Image (cartoon, rainbow, N blue to C red; front, side, top):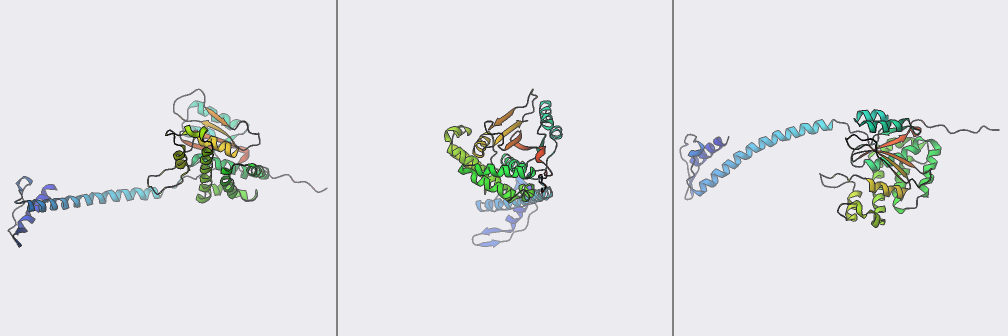
Length: 327
């Protein structure tokens, strides 16, 4: 291709030759090999370079066109993929352990949780960087929505008792998904998968955690590697950005501590991270000093990702409230 471009350049130089102020036509010579091309002047050299660049640019355009077609094909394939729900329906913990190819210690731990008094089940949470906050929002919401009127009233009473100013947006977002009573709470699972309502709860929890950390700088200053807590909190509270490479910051232990204290919730984390065999699966508990009636959040951690675990009694059909017969 380069030889053909050079030959074309030679032909153009033969046809278009500048003499003083006039253009004089010359006979077209046979195509020359690349090493036979010797520009007659600096001006000829400039013309030759321009022709070569134009030729190379044309080839580049063809390559870009092919790449563009391949990219569009990938975009078309991706557009047909269905993203997982933000919050899924409950599934078996033991089945998840097999599917995720967890080690034997993790399988035994999850089996024990499934067989235990709470009969925990797994609720998958979409891995979009918001998983920790969405799992906590889902735990508070679904436990109240699926537990009947008693569970609904218990959560409402708990939310009413919260005094931290940073918790107010969280309270509003949870109530927005639950509605005014246990009947309206039947839509909670749907609202957790609604982009506007679900992301509003995530944003409220991010803000709650970072505001609480700012109020207790001495305790949380070491949670960031840079030592600049303000920059860390600003990054953690971001939900979106104009940058095409933006991805939300993953919440971790510091944010769980802040939310446990600000919202007065107990949190239990079963850590199934790592691929190496271990004798026991680490379990972390926060808020153990809180009363037994305090909302309980069960999380399953795997790497940076968090799924939710819910007690079986907080799943599915509500238990009808007992009625008192007329005397």
